[in-house]
Length: 198
Image 1 (cartoon, one colour):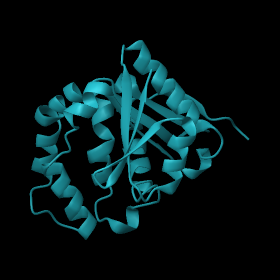
Image 2 (spheres, one colour):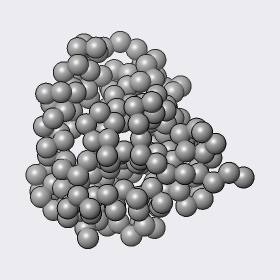
Image 3 (cartoon, one colour):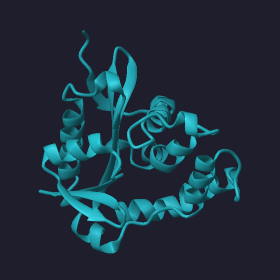
Image 4 (tube, helix red, strand yellow):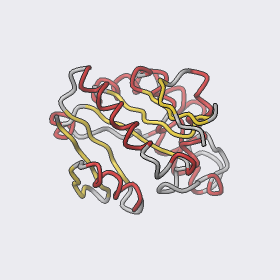
């Protein structure tokens, strides 16, 4: 069996990142059957990192196929400010309200028009953030930990003091993964926040 490799993401990986994002978009399971437009998840949680923080975009590749990623930004506040002017307006123009498609399409289109903003108290202590998703062929073989270790190394080299990430309380596999890695869990506003400082 081939061994997965971790490398920096490149623009040619964009479609793969979007595909992984939607195929893990239902609390870790495939969300494609819930959607008319399979690119909405990627617009919300993947594409902007390749555009605005490519040095913090890593992929897991197996036999030439990208099957996992970790994406993030060292300075969440600055990243979110950039998106307000340079990412969300184009997505909002492409998907005007009230939107079309399935109920999930409509929900995600509303989120495009009301993008999340991280609380100041979180950013003050944990300035960086990340998203990590893996497809089944690279799950359970240590690839998630390897991606996180590589990403954390880049954050530390960039001077970051800490990182946070949000998880659906319904994603039992992800909750167990982050707890196993030793991240601190905070039950938070109907969701779960994990944090790490170094």
